[in-house]
Length: 218
Image 1: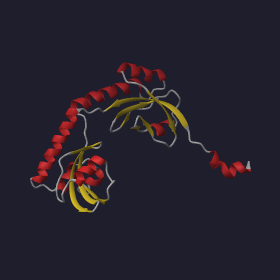
Image 2: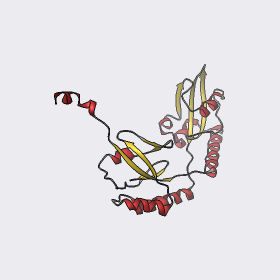
Image 3: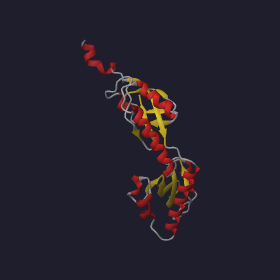
Image 4: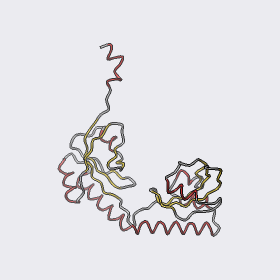
């Protein structure tokens, strides 16, 4: 008993569980992307027409961390950003503003402030690609139906009923306490905290809302 008391951390194991997940994604299409690119071009025209890059970034950039500083990304070596962003930044001359640059985060306008060897000082404006209002309304309606049928239910059959009625495939995965859950490269938020904070087998979560879509977990 004395050995266990003094070494009990060696015997600790995180909790594990099995979950089923329904996702109503916020799917964007080519028209949504084109609309955001057009908006980026309009912002670029405003800046070239005399508005300060920093003022436009503060008002329009979706990167809240840099937006409060006028879009400033500071200075740093090669490798800080995703390849498409870095390629575009490296092609600029000091003071030049890029055309809209598409990355997994959305469209960027990039301004190169200074170049010293491989070290670049940059500002940027980020515009995320989001659904049109009509598409978002359809997504919200599907999410409302999912919530109406299954959210916070203690009847496991309600989860399956929602999947059938809304034609949503059921994803299944193991979940480990304290670890984030990723399925097919997609981060699924809120699963661990909900599953290990009193949820009972067969119970369905409330509807979780994230940037990528809506989620319900059993």
